[in-house]
Length: 374
Ligand SMILES: [Zn+2]
Ligand SMILES: [Zn+2]
Image (cartoon, rainbow, N blue to C red; front, side):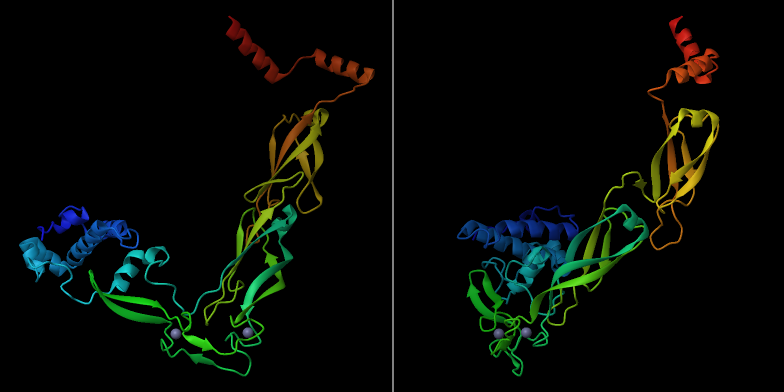
Protein backbone atom coordinates (compact mmCIF):
# COMPACT_ATOMS: atom_id res chain seq x y z
CA UNK A 1 0.00 0.00 0.00
CA UNK A 2 1.40 3.31 -1.01
CA UNK A 3 1.79 5.87 1.71
CA UNK A 4 -1.28 7.91 2.38
CA UNK A 5 -1.38 11.41 1.08
CA UNK A 6 -2.04 14.33 3.33
CA UNK A 7 -5.79 15.00 3.50
CA UNK A 8 -5.38 18.71 2.87
CA UNK A 9 -3.29 17.91 -0.15
CA UNK A 10 -5.94 15.48 -1.39
CA UNK A 11 -8.55 18.21 -1.34
CA UNK A 12 -6.11 20.82 -2.61
CA UNK A 13 -6.62 23.25 0.29
CA UNK A 14 -4.39 25.01 2.80
CA UNK A 15 -4.14 23.78 6.38
CA UNK A 16 -5.81 27.03 7.38
CA UNK A 17 -8.80 26.47 5.07
CA UNK A 18 -12.24 27.28 6.50
CA UNK A 19 -15.03 24.72 6.73
CA UNK A 20 -16.61 26.35 3.71
CA UNK A 21 -13.46 26.14 1.65
CA UNK A 22 -13.05 22.50 2.56
CA UNK A 23 -16.61 21.76 1.59
CA UNK A 24 -16.23 23.61 -1.68
CA UNK A 25 -13.02 21.76 -2.55
CA UNK A 26 -14.65 18.47 -1.70
CA UNK A 27 -17.62 19.18 -3.95
CA UNK A 28 -15.35 20.07 -6.79
CA UNK A 29 -13.10 17.04 -6.39
CA UNK A 30 -15.87 14.54 -5.87
CA UNK A 31 -17.66 15.75 -8.95
CA UNK A 32 -14.47 15.42 -10.92
CA UNK A 33 -13.78 11.86 -9.85
CA UNK A 34 -17.31 10.61 -9.43
CA UNK A 35 -17.56 6.98 -10.70
CA UNK A 36 -20.72 7.78 -12.63
CA UNK A 37 -18.82 10.40 -14.58
CA UNK A 38 -15.73 8.23 -15.04
CA UNK A 39 -17.07 4.79 -15.82
CA UNK A 40 -14.40 2.06 -15.73
CA UNK A 41 -11.65 4.49 -14.71
CA UNK A 42 -9.79 2.80 -11.85
CA UNK A 43 -7.68 5.83 -11.11
CA UNK A 44 -10.69 8.11 -10.77
CA UNK A 45 -12.27 5.54 -8.50
CA UNK A 46 -9.24 5.55 -6.23
CA UNK A 47 -9.17 9.34 -6.18
CA UNK A 48 -12.85 9.48 -5.41
CA UNK A 49 -12.31 7.16 -2.47
CA UNK A 50 -9.40 9.24 -1.29
CA UNK A 51 -11.31 12.49 -1.58
CA UNK A 52 -14.24 11.08 0.38
CA UNK A 53 -11.98 9.79 3.09
CA UNK A 54 -10.23 13.13 3.42
CA UNK A 55 -13.55 14.90 3.66
CA UNK A 56 -14.93 12.50 6.27
CA UNK A 57 -12.10 13.60 8.51
CA UNK A 58 -11.69 17.28 7.65
CA UNK A 59 -15.41 18.00 7.85
CA UNK A 60 -15.64 16.60 11.37
CA UNK A 61 -14.16 19.04 13.87
CA UNK A 62 -13.23 16.32 16.35
CA UNK A 63 -11.52 14.09 13.78
CA UNK A 64 -9.95 17.12 12.16
CA UNK A 65 -8.25 18.27 15.36
CA UNK A 66 -6.96 14.74 15.99
CA UNK A 67 -5.68 14.55 12.45
CA UNK A 68 -4.03 17.95 12.82
CA UNK A 69 -2.20 16.70 15.94
CA UNK A 70 -1.39 13.12 15.09
CA UNK A 71 -1.77 12.78 11.36
CA UNK A 72 -3.32 9.65 9.89
CA UNK A 73 -2.61 7.67 13.02
CA UNK A 74 -4.93 9.98 14.94
CA UNK A 75 -8.03 9.22 12.95
CA UNK A 76 -7.74 5.92 11.16
CA UNK A 77 -8.06 2.74 13.22
CA UNK A 78 -6.84 0.78 10.23
CA UNK A 79 -3.88 3.01 9.68
CA UNK A 80 -1.24 0.96 7.96
CA UNK A 81 -3.69 -1.84 7.22
CA UNK A 82 -5.18 -0.62 4.03
CA UNK A 83 -7.38 2.27 5.04
CA UNK A 84 -10.69 2.67 3.29
CA UNK A 85 -13.96 2.97 5.08
CA UNK A 86 -13.12 0.41 7.71
CA UNK A 87 -16.18 -1.55 6.81
CA UNK A 88 -18.48 0.98 8.33
CA UNK A 89 -21.89 1.20 6.70
CA UNK A 90 -21.50 4.15 4.43
CA UNK A 91 -24.65 5.65 3.07
CA UNK A 92 -24.00 6.91 -0.41
CA UNK A 93 -27.51 8.27 -0.59
CA UNK A 94 -26.60 10.88 1.99
CA UNK A 95 -23.38 11.97 0.44
CA UNK A 96 -24.90 12.14 -3.04
CA UNK A 97 -27.76 14.12 -1.65
CA UNK A 98 -25.24 16.49 -0.16
CA UNK A 99 -23.12 16.86 -3.26
CA UNK A 100 -25.70 16.73 -5.96
CA UNK A 101 -28.76 17.94 -4.16
CA UNK A 102 -28.08 21.44 -5.42
CA UNK A 103 -28.60 20.69 -9.04
CA UNK A 104 -31.65 18.63 -9.57
CA UNK A 105 -30.91 15.45 -7.68
CA UNK A 106 -29.93 13.60 -10.81
CA UNK A 107 -27.81 11.03 -9.03
CA UNK A 108 -28.95 8.37 -6.67
CA UNK A 109 -31.87 10.39 -5.42
CA UNK A 110 -34.68 10.70 -7.91
CA UNK A 111 -37.60 12.97 -7.32
CA UNK A 112 -39.70 12.65 -4.26
CA UNK A 113 -43.26 11.61 -4.47
CA UNK A 114 -44.79 13.79 -1.77
CA UNK A 115 -47.05 16.79 -2.33
CA UNK A 116 -45.97 18.89 -5.27
CA UNK A 117 -46.75 22.50 -5.98
CA UNK A 118 -48.52 23.07 -9.27
CA UNK A 119 -46.70 24.78 -12.12
CA UNK A 120 -46.90 28.52 -12.59
CA UNK A 121 -48.68 29.71 -15.70
CA UNK A 122 -47.08 32.64 -17.52
CA UNK A 123 -48.90 34.84 -19.98
CA UNK A 124 -48.23 38.10 -21.76
CA UNK A 125 -51.06 40.53 -22.37
CA UNK A 126 -51.16 43.55 -24.68
CA UNK A 127 -52.99 46.61 -23.41
CA UNK A 128 -53.38 50.18 -24.60
CA UNK A 129 -51.69 53.22 -23.08
CA UNK A 130 -54.97 54.36 -21.49
CA UNK A 131 -55.77 50.89 -20.14
CA UNK A 132 -52.41 50.88 -18.41
CA UNK A 133 -52.99 54.36 -17.04
CA UNK A 134 -56.46 53.81 -15.65
CA UNK A 135 -56.67 50.04 -15.25
CA UNK A 136 -58.98 47.61 -16.95
CA UNK A 137 -60.47 44.16 -16.79
CA UNK A 138 -59.28 41.69 -19.38
CA UNK A 139 -60.62 38.30 -20.27
CA UNK A 140 -58.06 35.71 -21.19
CA UNK A 141 -58.04 32.07 -22.11
CA UNK A 142 -55.67 29.85 -20.25
CA UNK A 143 -55.04 26.17 -20.45
CA UNK A 144 -54.46 24.76 -17.04
CA UNK A 145 -54.04 21.53 -15.19
CA UNK A 146 -56.84 21.04 -12.68
CA UNK A 147 -57.83 18.44 -10.18
CA UNK A 148 -59.95 15.77 -11.86
CA UNK A 149 -63.46 16.11 -10.47
CA UNK A 150 -64.53 12.65 -11.54
CA UNK A 151 -62.16 10.94 -9.09
CA UNK A 152 -61.44 13.84 -6.77
CA UNK A 153 -57.80 13.80 -7.83
CA UNK A 154 -57.06 10.28 -6.62
CA UNK A 155 -56.75 8.83 -10.12
CA UNK A 156 -58.83 5.79 -9.21
CA UNK A 157 -62.08 4.99 -10.99
CA UNK A 158 -65.16 6.20 -9.14
CA UNK A 159 -66.21 3.62 -6.57
CA UNK A 160 -62.77 1.96 -6.41
CA UNK A 161 -60.02 2.70 -3.93
CA UNK A 162 -56.34 3.37 -4.12
CA UNK A 163 -54.27 0.79 -2.25
CA UNK A 164 -50.86 1.24 -0.67
CA UNK A 165 -48.06 -0.49 -2.54
CA UNK A 166 -47.01 -3.53 -0.56
CA UNK A 167 -43.58 -3.71 -2.18
CA UNK A 168 -42.37 -0.41 -0.74
CA UNK A 169 -44.99 0.06 1.98
CA UNK A 170 -46.11 3.23 0.33
CA UNK A 171 -42.74 5.02 0.41
CA UNK A 172 -42.19 4.70 -3.33
CA UNK A 173 -38.52 3.83 -2.76
CA UNK A 174 -36.74 0.57 -2.16
CA UNK A 175 -33.31 0.22 -0.53
CA UNK A 176 -30.72 -2.40 -1.36
CA UNK A 177 -27.38 -2.87 0.34
CA UNK A 178 -24.36 -4.16 -1.52
CA UNK A 179 -20.77 -4.71 -0.61
CA UNK A 180 -18.52 -3.15 -3.19
CA UNK A 181 -14.90 -2.16 -3.42
CA UNK A 182 -15.91 1.15 -1.88
CA UNK A 183 -17.32 -0.56 1.18
CA UNK A 184 -20.99 -1.11 1.88
CA UNK A 185 -23.18 0.84 -0.40
CA UNK A 186 -26.82 1.47 0.29
CA UNK A 187 -28.61 2.37 -2.85
CA UNK A 188 -32.14 3.58 -3.01
CA UNK A 189 -34.17 3.21 -6.14
CA UNK A 190 -37.67 3.97 -7.28
CA UNK A 191 -40.07 1.17 -6.44
CA UNK A 192 -40.64 -0.79 -9.66
CA UNK A 193 -44.04 -1.98 -8.49
CA UNK A 194 -45.68 1.42 -8.19
CA UNK A 195 -43.18 3.59 -10.14
CA UNK A 196 -42.47 5.55 -7.00
CA UNK A 197 -46.07 6.55 -6.38
CA UNK A 198 -46.36 4.44 -3.25
CA UNK A 199 -49.89 3.64 -4.32
CA UNK A 200 -51.47 1.16 -6.66
CA UNK A 201 -54.46 2.11 -8.75
CA UNK A 202 -56.19 -1.04 -9.96
CA UNK A 203 -58.78 0.68 -12.12
CA UNK A 204 -57.70 4.10 -13.32
CA UNK A 205 -60.21 6.91 -13.64
CA UNK A 206 -61.18 7.29 -17.30
CA UNK A 207 -61.45 11.04 -17.18
CA UNK A 208 -57.83 11.62 -16.16
CA UNK A 209 -56.33 8.21 -17.06
CA UNK A 210 -55.25 7.73 -13.49
CA UNK A 211 -53.21 10.94 -13.18
CA UNK A 212 -55.75 12.73 -10.97
CA UNK A 213 -55.47 15.87 -13.08
CA UNK A 214 -57.06 17.09 -16.27
CA UNK A 215 -56.14 19.79 -18.76
CA UNK A 216 -58.80 22.38 -19.14
CA UNK A 217 -59.29 25.55 -21.13
CA UNK A 218 -60.87 28.28 -19.17
CA UNK A 219 -61.60 31.94 -19.49
CA UNK A 220 -60.59 34.11 -16.60
CA UNK A 221 -61.01 37.78 -15.85
CA UNK A 222 -57.93 39.67 -14.87
CA UNK A 223 -58.02 43.04 -13.13
CA UNK A 224 -55.20 45.21 -14.43
CA UNK A 225 -54.51 47.92 -11.83
CA UNK A 226 -54.25 51.55 -12.86
CA UNK A 227 -50.71 52.81 -13.21
CA UNK A 228 -49.17 49.55 -14.39
CA UNK A 229 -46.19 50.02 -16.70
CA UNK A 230 -44.77 48.15 -19.64
CA UNK A 231 -43.11 44.85 -18.69
CA UNK A 232 -44.57 44.70 -15.19
CA UNK A 233 -45.96 41.39 -14.02
CA UNK A 234 -49.14 40.75 -12.08
CA UNK A 235 -48.94 37.75 -9.82
CA UNK A 236 -52.19 35.93 -9.03
CA UNK A 237 -51.31 33.53 -6.23
CA UNK A 238 -52.81 30.08 -6.49
CA UNK A 239 -54.33 30.72 -9.93
CA UNK A 240 -51.79 28.52 -11.71
CA UNK A 241 -51.90 24.79 -12.22
CA UNK A 242 -53.27 22.53 -9.52
CA UNK A 243 -50.77 21.00 -7.13
CA UNK A 244 -50.65 17.23 -6.84
CA UNK A 245 -51.06 15.05 -3.78
CA UNK A 246 -52.24 17.93 -1.67
CA UNK A 247 -49.55 20.38 -2.82
CA UNK A 248 -50.48 24.05 -3.32
CA UNK A 249 -51.47 25.50 -6.67
CA UNK A 250 -48.96 27.38 -8.74
CA UNK A 251 -49.36 31.07 -9.56
CA UNK A 252 -50.63 32.84 -12.63
CA UNK A 253 -48.11 35.44 -13.78
CA UNK A 254 -49.28 37.97 -16.30
CA UNK A 255 -46.74 40.27 -17.88
CA UNK A 256 -48.16 43.46 -19.35
CA UNK A 257 -47.03 44.97 -22.65
CA UNK A 258 -48.24 48.51 -23.08
CA UNK A 259 -48.76 49.64 -26.67
CA UNK A 260 -47.22 53.05 -27.41
CA UNK A 261 -49.50 56.05 -27.84
CA UNK A 262 -49.58 58.31 -30.89
CA UNK A 263 -49.17 61.57 -29.00
CA UNK A 264 -48.31 60.75 -25.39
CA UNK A 265 -45.06 59.29 -24.16
CA UNK A 266 -44.67 57.87 -20.72
CA UNK A 267 -41.65 57.98 -18.42
CA UNK A 268 -42.44 56.47 -15.04
CA UNK A 269 -45.65 58.17 -14.02
CA UNK A 270 -45.10 61.34 -16.02
CA UNK A 271 -46.57 61.92 -19.44
CA UNK A 272 -44.82 63.92 -22.18
CA UNK A 273 -46.37 65.58 -25.15
CA UNK A 274 -45.06 67.86 -27.91
CA UNK A 275 -47.36 70.76 -28.69
CA UNK A 276 -47.06 72.78 -31.91
CA UNK A 277 -47.92 76.48 -31.62
CA UNK A 278 -47.66 79.23 -34.19
CA UNK A 279 -44.74 81.64 -34.01
CA UNK A 280 -47.25 84.43 -33.44
CA UNK A 281 -48.67 82.60 -30.42
CA UNK A 282 -45.13 82.14 -29.17
CA UNK A 283 -44.31 85.80 -29.64
CA UNK A 284 -47.51 87.31 -28.31
CA UNK A 285 -48.53 84.66 -25.79
CA UNK A 286 -51.75 82.66 -25.96
CA UNK A 287 -54.08 80.26 -24.24
CA UNK A 288 -53.83 76.91 -25.99
CA UNK A 289 -55.79 73.70 -25.50
CA UNK A 290 -53.65 70.74 -24.56
CA UNK A 291 -55.00 67.17 -24.74
CA UNK A 292 -54.57 65.07 -21.60
CA UNK A 293 -54.79 61.33 -21.01
CA UNK A 294 -58.16 61.90 -19.34
CA UNK A 295 -59.59 62.42 -22.80
CA UNK A 296 -60.46 66.11 -22.77
CA UNK A 297 -58.31 69.19 -23.19
CA UNK A 298 -56.93 71.51 -20.57
CA UNK A 299 -56.12 75.16 -21.22
CA UNK A 300 -52.49 76.12 -20.90
CA UNK A 301 -51.24 79.70 -20.86
CA UNK A 302 -48.25 80.30 -23.09
CA UNK A 303 -46.53 83.51 -21.98
CA UNK A 304 -45.29 86.18 -24.35
CA UNK A 305 -41.95 85.41 -25.93
CA UNK A 306 -41.98 81.67 -25.39
CA UNK A 307 -39.02 79.98 -27.08
CA UNK A 308 -39.06 76.70 -28.98
CA UNK A 309 -38.40 73.71 -26.71
CA UNK A 310 -39.80 75.37 -23.57
CA UNK A 311 -41.38 72.79 -21.32
CA UNK A 312 -44.47 73.42 -19.22
CA UNK A 313 -45.64 71.28 -16.35
CA UNK A 314 -49.28 70.41 -15.78
CA UNK A 315 -49.38 69.07 -12.26
CA UNK A 316 -51.30 65.87 -11.53
CA UNK A 317 -52.24 65.21 -15.14
CA UNK A 318 -49.94 62.19 -15.47
CA UNK A 319 -50.37 58.49 -14.80
CA UNK A 320 -51.86 57.37 -11.47
CA UNK A 321 -49.43 55.63 -9.13
CA UNK A 322 -50.14 51.96 -8.48
CA UNK A 323 -52.56 51.53 -5.57
CA UNK A 324 -52.65 55.26 -4.92
CA UNK A 325 -54.83 58.23 -5.67
CA UNK A 326 -51.97 60.54 -6.60
CA UNK A 327 -50.76 60.97 -10.13
CA UNK A 328 -47.65 61.99 -12.01
CA UNK A 329 -47.47 65.19 -14.07
CA UNK A 330 -47.86 66.01 -17.72
CA UNK A 331 -45.05 67.90 -19.46
CA UNK A 332 -45.79 69.93 -22.55
CA UNK A 333 -42.89 70.80 -24.83
CA UNK A 334 -43.55 73.67 -27.20
CA UNK A 335 -42.73 73.30 -30.87
CA UNK A 336 -42.87 76.50 -32.87
CA UNK A 337 -44.17 76.17 -36.36
CA UNK A 338 -42.55 78.40 -38.97
CA UNK A 339 -45.18 79.41 -41.51
CA UNK A 340 -44.93 78.19 -45.07
CA UNK A 341 -46.71 79.23 -48.28
CA UNK A 342 -47.16 82.84 -47.18
CA UNK A 343 -49.13 85.27 -49.33
CA UNK A 344 -47.40 88.26 -50.80
CA UNK A 345 -49.11 90.48 -48.23
CA UNK A 346 -48.00 88.34 -45.29
CA UNK A 347 -44.43 88.36 -46.62
CA UNK A 348 -44.41 92.16 -46.77
CA UNK A 349 -45.84 92.45 -43.27
CA UNK A 350 -43.07 90.18 -42.01
CA UNK A 351 -40.37 92.15 -43.80
CA UNK A 352 -41.70 95.37 -42.26
CA UNK A 353 -41.73 93.70 -38.88
CA UNK A 354 -38.16 92.50 -39.32
CA UNK A 355 -36.82 96.01 -40.05
CA UNK A 356 -36.37 96.61 -36.38
CA UNK A 357 -33.95 93.81 -35.44
CA UNK A 358 -34.47 93.72 -31.72
CA UNK A 359 -33.78 90.02 -31.18
CA UNK A 360 -31.78 89.57 -28.01
CA UNK A 361 -30.46 86.09 -28.66
CA UNK A 362 -29.51 86.81 -32.23
CA UNK A 363 -27.67 89.96 -31.14
CA UNK A 364 -25.76 88.09 -28.43
CA UNK A 365 -24.82 85.42 -30.92
CA UNK A 366 -23.47 87.96 -33.43
CA UNK A 367 -21.49 89.66 -30.67
CA UNK A 368 -19.86 86.35 -29.81
CA UNK A 369 -19.03 85.71 -33.45
CA UNK A 370 -17.47 89.18 -33.71
CA UNK A 371 -15.28 88.51 -30.68
CA UNK A 372 -14.28 85.18 -32.12
CA UNK A 373 -13.26 86.70 -35.47
CA UNK A 374 -11.05 89.39 -33.90
ZN1 LIG B 1 -59.84 11.27 -12.51
ZN1 LIG C 1 -44.11 0.64 -4.38
